[in-house]
Image (cartoon, rainbow, N blue to C red):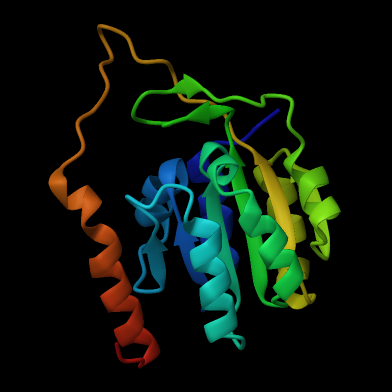
Length: 198
């Protein structure tokens, strides 16, 4: 059983309130469509950087919830940030991995290494306040408000349905140049919304 990116992001949208959201890879397109906001920050082309950026925002904005919508292959690139998050222990951070067992989801749809890897067990071993796997959007809707209200950091491994493989009739999409400039533009919008300066 699993949910789509959009189903997960629809739940996050309903519950987020004034949360800052750092997103990457397949979650990025879904959260942008479902919950557009100046409080969203895409970690592209900084693949693997979402959790580190989320940690920085959680430290800088301790009064706001911060949600990281990570990719499974992205998190594999920077597993060390899980140890750093656990060491710093920001109470306002919720780290979610959109786990579809793919790398370059939406671009190449390649199987990622470590398909048997238990991200929630890794988060518990690192020292997160809580870590669990969620299989459905309904379960995410039930658990997320309580996590926001409870000191973290919390980790959620979301079971995300894999998109179809690319084929001759469904070719890989092209990414516009603006896709790789969005992080800077979104960072400026977030700083303005938060009333901070460069």
